[in-house]
Image (cartoon, rainbow, N blue to C red; front, side, top):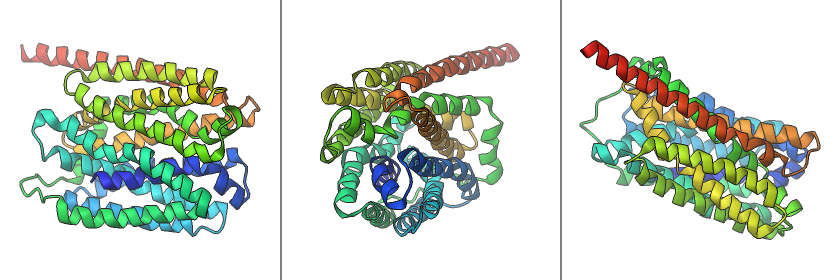
Length: 383
């Protein structure tokens, strides 16, 4: 199931590394090309809840395979897009299965392990998304530079095909699992903790995406890196994501709220630091590593929190994590595009977006307070 995450992470983040390439070929500016990144994020936001609910009655293994197939087809269409408008449309389609895939795969993985190991199981599924930034994104960026950007999306289609075969053969059928229902999944939307946790994610990751959406021109124009060295910097970012995800999965088993709070605080500092030190290639890459590690360390705790908040709708709850994650993606890319279009300079997205993790931290404090008040109310009723 993590292999599907590799395909998703590659197609999502490689677009940022390939942004100057497809912008030039399709005849648009770099800020305009950011629309394609936002379109993908919008597809995730729309597709995550709709596909999770519509697939509620499907066996989870079969649904994961179907979503991998949809991912592969959409990426092949992206590679064949003749115009920028068509490309944006195919990026929206590619985003549709993203959240539902991770939501369904996370619940399926959690059902295969003891209760206390769920954050680590979810982190394992998510590891494909993180490893994509070490192998998939740098590789796709290099392939796009060498053979043209469509080759990167065709490669994602191949990975999706292999994913389908691997899941069919290797993932066990969980025959004892309770079949979901549309009503049960939709019940997650009635819970306040679901919505406020989504707000934590949407705000908290905005700074990361504001930096990463425009990282290639910053590294080449400000840091002075050669274009051929950009994949190395992206691999370092991916290494930070992978390590942060694994460490966060273990920390979330002991102190989930503290893990989220510390991660977002450090992410804010790293975002601001990137804006300050971007003139030095080495310092910029170190800041990117710190940002990716800190922000991603919060992922397992946030995903588990949404699954628990959703209760009768765990698949929708887990899928909404990725919907909120990509609201953050769209927010970061859009915010970066606005300040760049205003002429504030390549480092301005990071400088402005450093406030977003702090906004996520404040929202988390509200969520924790709400949770404590609910517990006190329940205890009072029980007494």
